[in-house]
Structures are given as C-alpha cells and as structure tokens.
Image 1: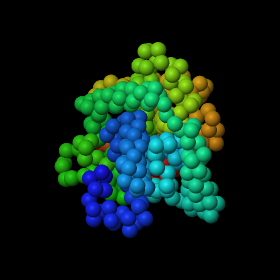
Image 2 (image 1 turned 180 degrees about the vertical axis):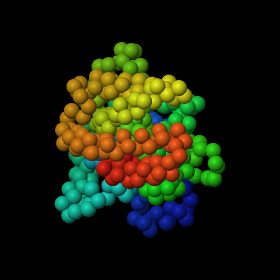
Image 3 (image 1 turned 45 degrees about the horizontal axis):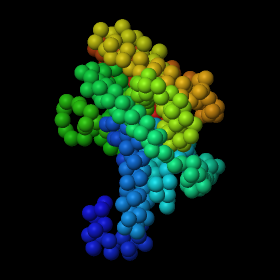
Image 4 (image 1 turned 90 degrees about the horizontal axis):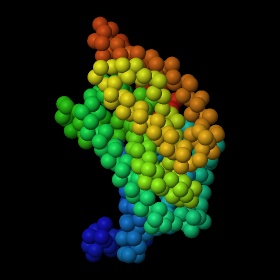
Length: 364
C-alpha cells in the first residue's frame, strides 16, 4: 500500500475519492491455513499497520472484511468483534460480507433487518466510546503473540499429519460439497485430481468439520497454547487478559461457541477404526483440553455462561439436526463399506447437507 500511495497518478485518484481507500481482508483462508488464534491475531495486527500507513499519507482506511459465518471462518458475533477493535484500527466505516445461509435469519424480516443494522451501528459507536478500554498493552500483546505462535504450531502439526486429508476425504462430507451447489465457488482451486489443503476452499473445509460436529478450525491449538503458558506460571495474566482485553475475550467467546457445537459422541465409532482411531483421539484430546482451558481462564462453570440466549438457541438447533447427522454418518459408513446401494447413500449424504447447514445457520 505504501508503494501504491507513492504513485502520483494513484494518489490523485485517491484525492478524487475524498481520500478514502477501501482494503479487503480475507478471513476464511487465513483461519484454514494458520489456525483460529494465529489468523485472527495476524489480521488484527495487519489492520493496525495498514491504518498507520494510510494515516501517514492522510488517507482514511475503510476495511472490507471477508468474514465467514462461523468463528472458524473469521465470523461469530459481529457486534462484539467490531466493538473490540483497538484504537489503532481505522473505524470510518464497516464493510462486511454476509453469508448466503444467514441472509434470511438476519435480514429476512423488517424486525431482523433493523436489529442487525442497529448492532452494526452501535458496534462502531462502542468502538469510539471505548477506545481507552480497547487499548492493548505491550505485555498483553506479548502474551497473545505467544498464544498465537503455540496454537499455530499445534495446528500446523495437525495439518501435516499423514491422516489429515484422508480423514476428511473418508470420514466427512467434504467430497460431496461440490455436488450440492451450496458454495458460491468451486470446492477447490485448480484441476489437481489429488486433494491437498492448499487448493481446498474454506467453505467445504470448515463445513466438513462442522458436519462432523468437531469444528476443528474454530478452536484447535487454543487448549495447548493456554496450558503451556499456565505451566509457565501465567494463569493470572491470562485471566486478566480475558477480563480486560475485549478483543481477546471476543476471540475466546467465539471459540467457546465452536466448542459448544461439538459432539464427539456422533463419531465415537471412529475410535475403533483401525486406520483413523489415533487421529480421532488426537482431535478429541485437544477438544477436551481447549474446553478445560477456556473455562479456566474465563472463570465460567460452563461454555457460553454469560450468553444464555445464544446458548439456548444452539442447544435447540443441535437437537433438531442430530437425527439428520446420525443418518448422514450411517450413510457415510455404508459408502465406505462399498455398499451395493452406494448411489442411494450418497444421495442421502447430499440431501442431509442442506438441512444441517440451514438449521445450523453459521456452519459453513
């Protein structure tokens, strides 16, 4: 952006646009590639740096955030996210992407439209009114940096596991997303027949973990990172971080939402699978550790304790989709067994995707 602003012709162009520069940031692939905590912290710092660059050139930055629906794609509670941005991040306007499956629930009626627009407006106002509260000290920044680094290493280790892609291909709905016309783009980039994570788009990636009720991209690595710092005697610092730094609290609460939507009982049968039982156990252990650690630093007795309405909403919807998820898992097992009714079972998997995604609201 510095190089761009120093081109005379482009600087004249910005002058004619009242010195506003829109910059889009992609959240979904960031989380897929870097893990939940590292991706969000990196984007946060990038916004601060870009704001500084724009201010230096007397230009007002407007960030257009390509946030997905769930926390695993940079989504989650929109109001809390924007209200918690630091004083170093430009707040001239809010521009965000709205996911297809959430348009009806957020803007389908006049009442919903007014409510959600008011939330966006008050988020911007809250940011301005709470600038002093949103200041992140250097000590706090160092702790978040350490947490992000450790969680990134843990997530990277998972991505590089030899069973990572085979697990998604054989135990999830990944290969069926392309047949459902749910995503706005193809499920993967390029025309490589062999699937690799780099080519895979975020919607089917995150959606597949959601259908499994494991939601890995929304929390994986957080438990390991928090525990490592606690083992180094930093429990009180992290409890203080949760209570005093709105941005960090927003991240943890979003992660709690992902954890709260997990149901490892659904796939408990994989624990007996010769090929994938160790990989499943690895996921389950990090889930349990993450749940334990976020409760410890928050002081909550259970996940989403201070959000009773959202918690109840999730509980109701999870009960609704559970029968469909059980049917889906059963069909996937039959397909893996090369049943002579394979085509019918594949149709069941595809049809179940629609219901689960609509009912879960921000699952993909």
